[in-house]
Length: 143
Image (cartoon, rainbow, N blue to C red; front, side, top):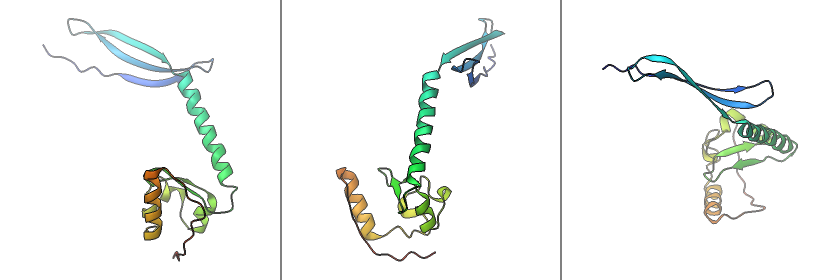
C-alpha cells in the first residue's frame, strides 16, 4: 500500500484578545490511507510570548543605558564572543554591530584584538569565574 506523506502547517497566531497560540494543522488519514479531513491543534503560548517581549524590552533598555556611557564598553559571553557593545566602542574602534555580533573578540576587525596580554588575562578569568578591574595595556590600533 502506497503511503502519501503528510504535510503539516505550523504557525503562531494572535486572537482578538491578544492571546497567542501555536497552531498546527495536520491532515487526517483514515485506516484506508485516505486523507479525510484535518486535525487542528492550538497550544496557548501567551506566557512565552510575554516573556519574549519582556526580554526584548529589557534588552532595548539595557542597550540604551550602555549607549549613554562615554567610555568604550564591550560585553563578552563565556566563550569570549561579543554579546553587545556600546556606540562609543563601535565609533572608537571603527567597527559595526554587524561586524562584531557573536564574533570572538580576537576575530573582529583585522584581528587587532588578538593581543597576547589580553588573551592571557581573558582566558584566565573565565574558568575561575572571577573579575578584573583597571586592567591597562597599551596597544596601537590601526584603522
